[in-house]
Amino acid sequence: MECTHRVAIPPPQPFVKSLKCSLKETFFPDDPLRQFKNQPPSRKLVLGLHYFFPILQWAPRYTFEFLKSDLVSGITVASLAIPQGISYAKLANLPPILGLYSSFVPPLAYAMMGSSRDLAVGTVAVPSLLLASMLGNEVNANENPKLYLHLAFTATFFAGVFQASLGLLRLGFIVDFLSHATIVGFMAGAATVVCLQQLKEILGLDQFTHATDLVSVLRSVFSQTHEWRWESGVLGCCSLFFLISTRYFVGELKKGLNPVSLGDLEFFSPYLKATIKTGIITGVIGFAEGIAVGRSFAMFKNYHIDGNKEMIAFGMMNIAGSCTSCYLTTGPFSRAAVNYSAGCKTALSNIVMAIAVMFTLLFLTPLFHYTPLVVLAAIIISAMLCLIDYEAAIHLWQVDKFDFVVCISAYIGVVFGSVEIGLVIAMAISLLRVLLFIARPRTMVLGNLPNSTIFRNAEQYPNASNVPGVLILQIDAPIYFVNASYLRERIARWIDEEEDRIKSSGETCLQYVIMVMSAVGNIDTSGISMLEEIKKAIDRRGLKLVLANPGGEVMKKLHKSKFVENMGQECIYLTVGEAVAGCKYMLQTCKSNPVIVAETRNLT
Image (cartoon, rainbow, N blue to C red):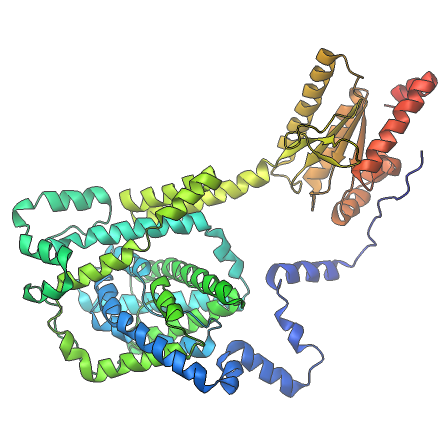
């Protein structure tokens, strides 16, 4: 029997061209430079400015209808941003006024460079908590507030540099290592920790632990039961309107716009290493949350945002913020949700919010002098409860138990250890899962669906029948050095199990092993060595190895390594159906002519 089609070997390509294609697929999957092709220099300049400053693209088309919507949404978000900013600054052990500063300059920068129409920029709880935890291990904010403040600005600067660098170097795919399950568990754990920290204000305690784990917090709370103030607790839990009677105050908020803090950056401090570490970690968490939130709302409105472009925007706004008395900002879900619900149309809503905050800084800050700390604690708790997404955790349990384990591990690590420990545990488990996917790829036996030439997983389709004398195996992953040994052992076990089944059922003895390579996108030298070893082992058993549908990259490497030549082109088929038909033909030929059987045995 002659095969209708042969598997083609791709024509050789120069190394430089192959490397260029690989780099393009890695760093430029969206092909952002496509719009610059065949354009005059002046047009390329305009397109470049549009890429880095999207405001130049949408501003000329701006309408009065958009302005009305953006005014309403911007003012609405500002009403949330002001108390929230003060609360989160307190959470970061920073002066409350920094929460307002951070809602003025960064939104202006993002409005010019950001690509999301719905993201409302500001401070967020988790990076604030991380800042307090990581910098607090180096410098006590109460004993040395000036140095602590300068280190916070410096950490923000490094966070911005890190974010912008990732965007410019097209490394946005790094954020994908923070899986959805990791973020759900991490956010819930961080929210729980933040809520527990507010017990100090809710219960009116003067002394409280600096640790963030559950055991330390509960020990601190229950070792001071004699210090609990029931008035503060009742008022904090019942209603914010009655909290003016409490005696705990924020302190005076200075009037005026952001002072320049460029000279406060500590580049030659003995705490530089800790500052850089804090900046990188908070930067990763910041843009992971911001990009995830931006993409979610972009999906609702059916438009696309560029992750790399967003990183550049986040980075530049944090660099600008660090020089103007701001600490790390991103796009929190709560503000984006309010912005979206209020009907925002463009990023101008961030400018409106910034202007509203500016008026507050200039004229209204004295009104916040008597804001009770317990009010701020209640604001923080109410915001944090929204981050504990138990429905998402239940969904993970129902769909993927391993994802649920990742989620719970992150939660437990944050609550019982620290924010850093929870993040490390979650990322380690997520990376372990990726490694397991690579190192232990799925292999399956295919069967023939009745009255067809379709071959599918025999476990998924119980009515799929075995082909007498033929074992069809499918590998569902690229073959690399990481999984080569496992695949060699697993394929040998599949053959052993098939021979045992045939012996017990009295069916036709096994003659051919077909390896379906459809899902094998690539192979390295260790994988090729594994195939050579499998072929030798199959030959020693008196069987014949056949390949079905290897891809272009795989065929190219098999050809260069002489594997195709040693195996024989006639043993490589374009489809599973053709491979099975070829094996059946040989089986029938061997039955009708025993001499061919003997010759085949001798050859193997």
